Image 1 (cartoon, rainbow, N blue to C red):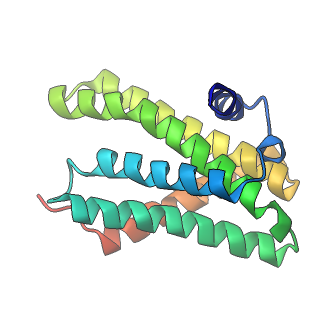
Image 2 (image 1 turned 90 degrees about the horizontal axis):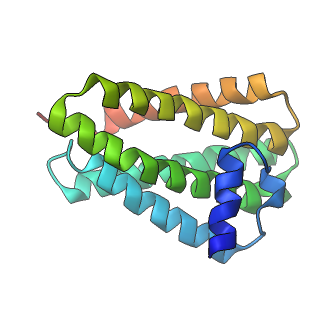
Length: 167
């Protein structure tokens, strides 16, 4: 367990690539489920209930996996799916866990510092995703970060349409 945690930390610190992630559909399933659960905890305060938060978190994870699968398929690199998806789910889980106290701090105090730290974490998550995409598709880091940014905008906009914030 500690080895896996260290692996995802190393991915987040750009020390390892997705090709270093163990090829395991079980690990992909576990990181995917945990990623969805952390997503629910992050979203539930903004939503009217757990069901809506669960729907949005499942949508986000499903969209990421679908976009990754079809992008890899179009490049004839489907064999990289499990490791890349596990790397994305594992790093998303880790960064999501880091975001939880910042989200709570921001919501409970309207702290500008919490908002800035959360923004920095969002930006870093795009760098991490770009790093993973760089290795997966053999592209430059800048292009990988650009793709991560474009995906993030797409995902957020689709989520806003499908799961509007209820005040």
